[in-house]
Image 1: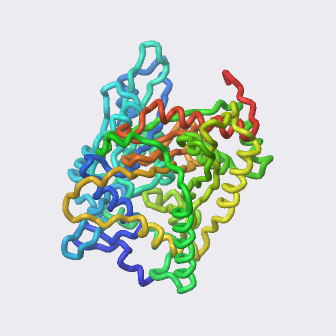
Image 2: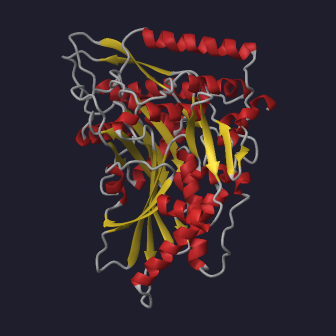
Amino acid sequence: MGSNTHLLWHETAPHEYGREIDEAEQLYTSLAKTWAGTGHTYFAITAYTGLSIPVTASESVTELETRIDDSFRYAWKRLRYDHPTLAARVEYDLFTKSCRKIYRSPRNDSEVNEWLEETLKFVNTGEEGLEFVNSDQVVGRFATLHILTPRQTSSQSSLKKDIVFRSHHDVIDGIGTLILFNNLLHHTVEAFNSPNDHSDIVFGDEHQNLSPPLRIASDIPLIPTQSQAEKFSEIKTANKAAAEGGEILSIPFNANITMPRRSQRIATHLSAAETHALLSKCKAAGVTITQAFHAAIALAVRDVQKREDQERKAKYLSYLLANLRAACEPPYNSSSHAVAVYHCTSANNLVVNLTIPAANASTPTAQPAEEFLQVLKQVKAFYQSFNPDSDYFAIVPSLFASSTPLYPEEPCPVPPPKMSPSVSLSSMGVVDKIIQPEYGRFEVEEPWVIGAEYSTGLGLFLGTWKGVLCLSSAYNEAFHSRDEVVSFLLRVNNIVLEGLEVNTLAGE
């Protein structure tokens, strides 16, 4: 790992620590800079959870709210100590022509309070979490926590708070954010339960907790072996051949607009009964729910294509997005290093071969199980072929680098819209295995996370919370309408249920 010493944190000036960034971080840094002209941050991490705190008969709502807000102040400050990378940012070094991640340790209470003032926002406009998220406000210099007090009614027996976290993607990823929420809520309830028992947090040695980049965390060698490089070359050749060999499916979008607008989030849910039945069907078929939904996405994209006189063959191309934390070296595989970019795509592309029916072909009222299982077989084989071994990790930096635009030193025009946008899938898994449904008196409402979308594609997110499956999407309102995206999500849900012959149970 010695050859990666440029990626290790080291003191660059009194109270200042820095390092170069690796290829994973560089991708998100370069994308953000390239699309800076939109006024938004490309792929900004945006996460939400709701909280409900019962109010007892003897409590003053005003005093309870003050106690809750004070608890969040302590917890956010504690997170700054535990995860100082929260307060790091990427800066471009004009001398070395490279991007560096810089962390400045607060020298006194005044600097701590300045950071709190900038990054912990109490929003009392009555907005709810999703409403606030879809207003798509500018992302700050540092990761920021917004504590919202939604509109309350006089009959409410609980005080509601909505938590929205926003950050540049070169600081943290989606699973890392869910882990961070868990840490945040643990500290918050600790402070809430014992407001006078926790000591103040003293900064000065917290730099020891700074998280390294993926290259260090997973001990990736600086240069892959010859055989690993040859394997990557073969993979690139295969991916290129798949992309050039025939019609590639893409999602329709509004091509009359060239400048992205606000990123939006919309979600659909199955019922608890449908989720349970679907899980049973997937287990019986030897597949995962993620594989089933990825197969359904391929078919849903096929279904929105324009039909012609004759049926035609086409391909759905995608990838697997893998959380790599479990494969990192200790302690980087733990919740202590939530604030990091520890994920990657698969090296090989997912290729699903499909048929677009002719214009005069009859449209079935339900997804034929035979066709769905045929597509699911292709998706399952792809997922099972993914092996995050040492050969895979050796080419992870190259995978990121191959998608990274050149970092623009000066402001640049916003790139034109992508004319063949895809639909991707990120699986969050069983979210309540990461975040508890309750923390003391704090009852948690469904948490979620997205990457803000400023391109023409759809980013889909799959997760289960308390036995209920959610399929959501991030999209840009310039290129897609809400009704269009909702219709697509519902189509995906229906394809899964019909394809696996799950009887939908209305009213569950």
